[in-house]
Image 1: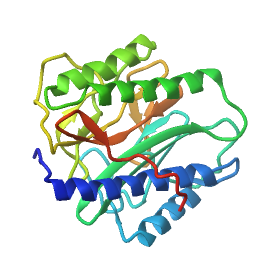
Image 2: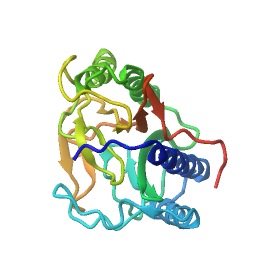
Image 3: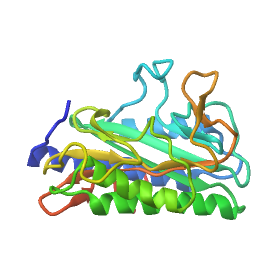
Image 4: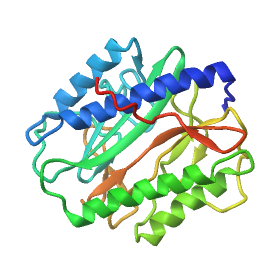
Length: 260
């Protein structure tokens, strides 16, 4: 299903998106060496409930996971890049943590992800990888608009990632989003310009460049959810929900600067 939202629904998406972004920034501010992933999940549950919103993850049971997910935020550490299932792990100095969060409020969902390093250790290669996903996301957003096609956005994202030297996995990428978290169209992180669905105002997309340092191959953890790099290399993932407008793309998941 490809869903086109009306002005009132886009207004709701701004509220949901800001909530997602503010929760992620609050989690980042609380996270330190020794923080347990289960504490991050608990904090997320408390903030979602406090905002009168609902988790998109707790009851989520797609074909690619061993569902239901049963937690409120995806927590990927180092080689874990997607669908990281929170578990009893205390973060160490220099760990690369990815937090991916989707919630629904007043019937409209928003989805975003951030990657950052924990503690004082800042490995140069890890910083560069995170920054590459952020640049790729910016390029995809800049390309999105009512005259663009999915392939244009995918190409813009992929060009940044490949120029930075990272292999690209085509199994998982961005997606449509609206009254539900995952919708068509699929937005791969590599594509051909001029191909695919033509974007139009009211369409919302979750764009999510993610990379693994030296491989495009994923393996699934024994938990049935967490996807890791096949070589054990580090990974990074950055995501925004955007709405196509008459002029381009508006980012829904910008933080307000308010910690919850």
